[in-house]
Length: 167
Image 1 (cartoon, helix red, strand yellow):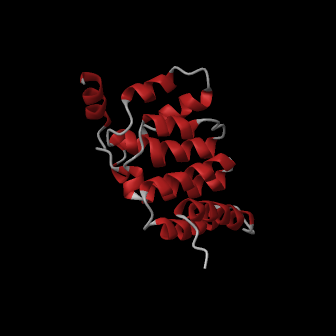
Image 2: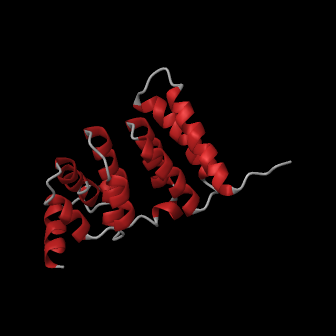
C-alpha cells in the first residue's frame, strides 16, 4: 500500500476542497461554510505548516468561496493562526481586489492577528498610504476586531486610539 506523504495529503485536501466548492449548486455563505467546516475538521490534527500550505493553495485560486474556506480554516486552527505575521498577511493580501474577500480577510485574519500583536502597526499603516484602494480598504477593515468585543477587541474605541497613539 502506497501511503502518501503529508505534503501530498494537503495537496489532495486543497484539490478536493476546490472540487467540492465547484460542485455546489449555490455559492452562498451557508453552502461555502459547510465545505469550510468539513476541511477544518480534516485539518485539525495537521501541523501549522500543513494548514498554511492548504490555505496558500486555496488563496491562489482567487475566488471568494476559496478565500472563505482558506481564511476561516486558518482562523479556526489555533497553532496555524499563531504563525500569522507581517510577512504572511502581506503574501495573502497580494491580488485582493473585491469587497467580500478584502472584508473577510481584514476581519477574520489581519485584524485578529493585529489585535494579538502578531501583525505590526507599521504593516497596517503602510496599507493606509497605498495607491491601491483595496490595501487602504484592508487597513480600514482590519480595525474592526480591535474594537468589536465579539472579535476580541476592547469595545472602547477612545481608549484603543489613545493606547495605539501613545505607544
